[in-house]
Length: 234
Length: 258
Image 1 (spheres, chains in turn green, orange):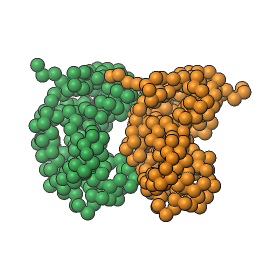
Image 2 (cartoon, chains in turn orange, blue):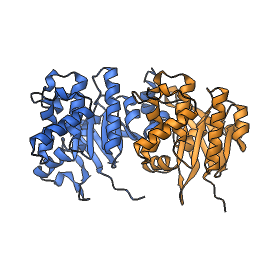
Image 3 (cartoon, one colour):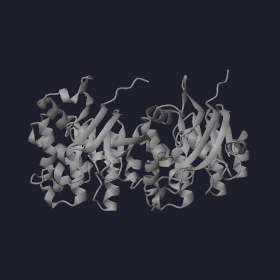
Image 4 (cartoon, chains in turn green, red):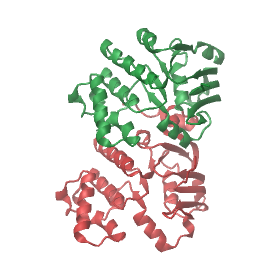
């Protein structure tokens, strides 16, 4: 029996803006879907429908007001919506990866070390981790002369490739991707498509936002339209 | 998941006469975890740090610490000698003003070596080698080992204070605004250094800061304080990206994005 890696049910979220006289900004209501190993699913819908917010709720970056977000961690299903902060940190460490749209730059740390960090965190020897990071950056066509430099001064596309490499280098059974190809050229988009295909073959479940129709059609098995969840919240 | 917290605070309160420093604070710090305590001046965050590190005596509540033998001990019940040993070996305290955490008239090497001697190191050559090793870790050249910290810049003094605190491989380090008062370029270097050492040594840290960017870079979890109380707590990125309390929303929205 194939059990889901991710099971979202009855999720509701409203932002309350206390600095704006308590204005309420409904995001989603009754959001529910499942994700299985080896599939890539896109969150679809127009801009502002709550795709990014939903992705952030799954990662535990945004809180939810109601419902459950269950993620399989070995034999256990952990509810991101209600678990303790420490359990959520552990879940992220072992199970859940997140490729954000923008790289959060760490002062003074070179690109290759930024990419190697998740592997080192997993206990891979530093030398091997750095070598694998270099190999992945090479695949993403990041010139070797940039590897030792902190990515703060890189172009948007270069930063995004560092970010993708960091997000994909370690094995996490569930991957969340927020527009991973937004600032990439055609050649690098193709590399990212290949990398996603490899993850799927390795049994990774991917939930993402893919505005680029070509990429979406290449990697996604189905699309979940969040418009209905947003309508229910309004 | 079986978890053994390193430090446990239960119902901590501190009154300064009629004024309240800290009200009913409970928290846990786990091995290898960085906990940021944020809030504005007067929110009670430094009082909380004083209570956790037993520099201040609570008006109510207690602090317990897991000793190396695995026993969770009420710190109020430890003898003076036991407590002193704990502070010298198992704990560190990095203060905002390095002059408060260093011996300013003792050489850089002496500042680092002193903590080693407190844990039983006796051989001068070994102490000096280890001190030079640690100076290198905090990016201070070996030829400065005999200079005293009065000849150091603010950033160097702060790095020396970190070496002095970490040389005995403590399990828990308290930090009070460690980057406060430093130029931003110096801050970035120090933050990166702290970040690297904390990960490498698997340190547990309680860091008090009013700088949310420092909390974001260094901490796993954070607590937000106001009027002596903890008003919000959670994973750092969650508290910063989806703050729930009006005061936390104000704090987060008041930061200028560079």
